[in-house]
Length: 161
Image (cartoon, rainbow, N blue to C red; front, side):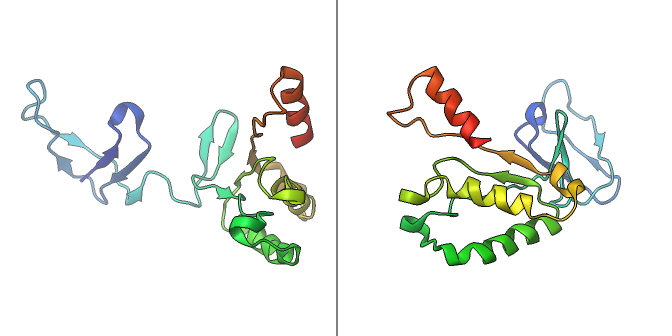
């Protein structure tokens, strides 16, 4: 049996049968009575340890969000937690995750941007350039009221780097 969402024109997730088997497609006037074969594969289209090609990038199908890093208000972050956060970051890398999501606004108060600072520190501390080269960072910046001109946007992007 095959599960696809959404329809085959924009597949984001799929399951394939474990053996070559035939499955009747949904009824339609043009396909009534026709069968199609599925390639042998068990499970989802991508496993967490497999990489997905996105243009020139090769990323893990599941990313690691860092919103809580530095957020005292909602997550109770304390700077003493940094060692545990680094261990968690290293564990994610060891298990094949190489996509990390962050933003300049992740953190609260004086810790605004702490997520990006910690992520940068953890990446610098990695032993071996091969691992560092394969990390993909998805970041963004907040459109604060004091950040409305093109120059302010460019400055925020440069600061993020």
